[in-house]
Length: 320
Image (cartoon, rainbow, N blue to C red; front, side, top):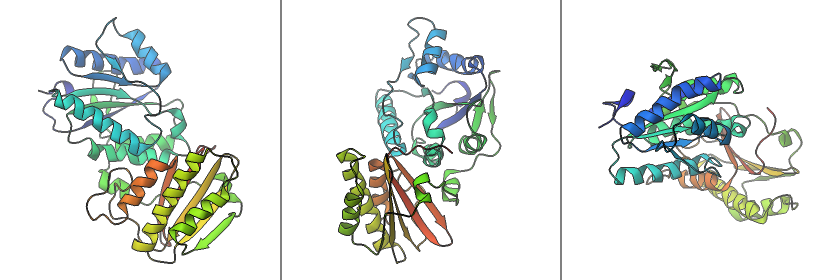
C-alpha cells in the first residue's frame, strides 16, 4: 500500500523541491524520508556530497535511510535511467509497494549539457512509471539558472513545499509532447572556428577514419574509440533513415572533439530515442541509444533545414 501524498497513486509520483536555503531543503526532505522509514518503505538519498551530509546530520542516528554512493551515476542520462530502473526493479522484486528517493543532479550538468538532462527529467516520467516510486528532485534556486528552473517546472508534475503541501506546477508537459519540441542548441565554443574537416555522404568507415584523424592525443584512447563508434552509428542512421545528403563537420579542441551529423530528414519519430532502448523496428533508435552510452554529451536539434546530432567526446562543459 502506498503512503503519504502518493497514496492511491499508480506509477511514478514525481516532484521537484526548489529550495532557497538549507533550512528549506531539510524542512521538505527530512519528514519525507522519516515517513518512508516509518512505513517500512525503501527510503533512499541520492544527493551530492554537501547536501547528503546535511541530511545525514539532520536525521536520527541509525535512521534506516540508505545513502546511494556517488560516482558516475549522473555521467550520462541513459545510463542513469538504466541504473535506476535496475535499482527499482530489485526493490519491487523484494516486495516493496512504494520506494522513496530524494536526489539531485550535479551542478555541472545544469549548464552546457542541461539540454539532455532536461530530456532526462521529462523522460523518466515515462521510464519509471511502471514502478511505485515517489521521488523528490532538489534544485537550489540560488544557483540554478532561470531557464533551467523553467524546464524543471515543465518536467515535474508537482512541487513539494516546507509546509507539507504538494502543489501542481501548473505548466507540466507530458513527455511525448515536451521531448518532441524544437529547441535551440547552444554552440560549443569550438564551433565558432571553422571545422577541421567536413565530409558529404561519408561511409561509416570514412566517418570513423575522420574521427581518428582529428585525435591529437588530447583524449584517452577509449574515449576516441567510443566517439568513432557513435559517429559511425549516427552516420549509418542518416544514410538509412534520413534525407540526404548526410554531412559531417568535425572540430578538435584542447580537451574535446565535437562532431555534428546533419541530414535533411525529420529525425526519429520516437520521442525517447537515445534515452531508452529502441523498440522493435524503431528507425535509427539503436544508433542514438549507442551514442548516448558512448559520448559525454549528445545534443539533438530539429529545424526547417533538417535534423542534426552533435556528439562530444572529452569535456562537454563550457561557460554559458
